Length: 341
Length: 290
Image (cartoon, rainbow over the protein chains, first blue to last red):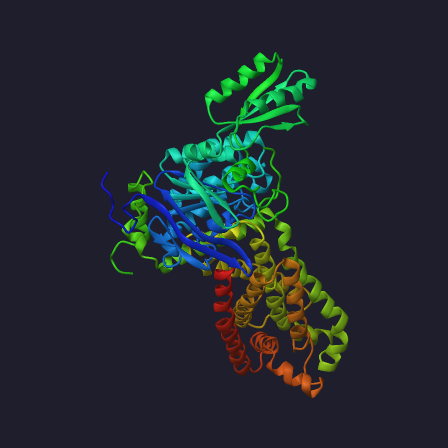
């Protein structure tokens, strides 16, 4: 393909962030963030509420000016070339940023016109995207009558109108039920398949693993870890085994046996009394085998055994030695609804 | 317009030519200037949005429909007799006096709505969407004002129908249209003030409360409803410079006859001054709101 020469960086980096700082009075929402997103990849920004994820996205989409630092998106400087930059980005916020009073089709047509598509093209694009996001049947209904998932899909469709090079997804599935979340993940994967570069913020390791190839972990406005998802997963201890004995009375003996085994992943073995199971962090298949071996040698009957991804808290614990700075329900500014993980 | 291809056309071609989304920002994008046609297109798309709101929610036109009816009947039948007597023309004479004033009042009262609607917009996510699009920041504000002017024209039409029913004589249509036009000019300048309030204040209620505080003294401390001659000197000094007085007096002159020039120029001067200060300020505040 012949490249149209432009001021986009030639090193294949779609988003660069250097020394980004944003202060609100005493609060340091961002405290010196550096970040690179390679073209055509999905960068997950993982962090708890109040970590500065939304602030970062708002700065990169020119909605907010940083206190200090620099950033470019598709080669355009966020401070010096905001208009050019806005032409090549798409944005989907935590709250559906569509006009709820307008029907779905009108929302998309309006954005097409605002992006300078001729009337005919704007119409065609609206039809096309409604079709693609399975909203054709709801095209004429006001968005206020849509379900949470439909609204989020309309929002994603709206971000795609201008065929953006870089897409910002700010907690795209916060507040959605698990089924709808899978649906949105599916849509995001299709967008990625089209070659768009995505910067995604999330509170969920699971979401990051589903969508992102690289991960940046942020806490209190600072980057605390970064790298390929697999590397990070190895770093934080891969998986957690959840072992539940059939007989609850065997919980203690089981825990004792596993303790003796001395497996230490990112944390030590813990007992989850509520569900009557033992949680064993493991790093390798050998360790998994060892766990099973111990259980068999002690003659403990198993109710179930499952592997889980480490939770955000466990990731934080292993990376920083402390829990995520803000538990999910103490900072209401970033999320309206609790999500069952 | 010169013969070179418009930047938007070039951009669209470039977008079509770039199926994969690798960093291929077309060179045309480097031109950050939005041409006038672009501004008109953006404003048009947003006007359509605001008109669709009315279609979805026709009740939002109730105030524009009912206010002229209620106020005209109220003033003509409650105050018409006594003020008309003082004017020397009875209730009929008062109708001729107050209707041009009502046009002025309507322009002011309805322009307040622009601020509350705007404030509601800000509390939803859609403003973020607009602000992340490559459109002139003013477009969103211009669209609001345009639609509000449509509402105002609708209210004025209703007002004139009621006016004729209660006995107002339309002497010359040209004068009527001129009066309505002048009101629209003044109203759009005032709307910038309310838009500023809509951006700066936190919610629609405070915008309404502030609007009322500005509106009420201006409306009643004016020559809209009664001649200012019987007012105390200090109040007369205020009413004489109150743009609503000059607007009402200019409308009166245009619609029923009498001197016009002085009031016309003072009103236009006010409109220009208010716009010159409030419009850039509103756009600035809109641009920098976080």
